[in-house]
Image (cartoon, rainbow, N blue to C red):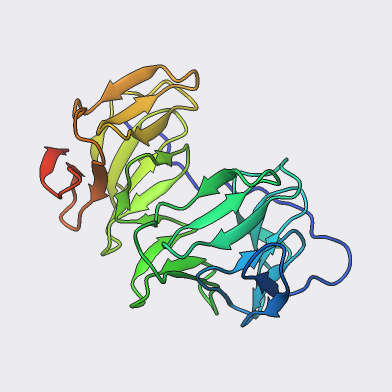
Length: 253
């Protein structure tokens, strides 16, 4: 029985003292340009101390490394990159939001690559930061990834993948199991409860695997041998593993 639903972790961080500029760079070492206050477009950057604003909402690239989304002074969401001074965020031209360390190595990214022209938009009312495709379809939000977990990506405790119609949610729960929900009803769960800190990985070789905090495999879909396979949460309430050429390999039912 599922006894606990995960919530997306929110870590508060302090704002930098003094005014925070709303600017972006097309290249980190070149001249800055002023952004429209509520979005980060393809190829644009947020450097330490810089921010985007929309009414009472603010997205700040903090000096200690994490990107934090605020409603007033309340932190609603943060990237898992605190403790990395000098980190900076960019909306890459291929569609994913990436945070790079001071050494130019990627620290974290949204699972939205493969969507050229995608952009990040702050809300006006909802309190939900969203990445949209070039044709304005939601791809990811601070509450949930939309639809899929691409090859090579990780679903960490408290993180969610939501079906495109918004009805179904796959949650990597704090106690170790990944659970597919229809509202409050559990439709599917991995047999991995009792392993706090476990996470789901869509491995490059094609497996969806749940590993414990020591990286020991606890459960897998046994779909290795399919490089580039990806996980989908579908609008009919299933989790499906698809091959790189979109053939179904495994389903939760």
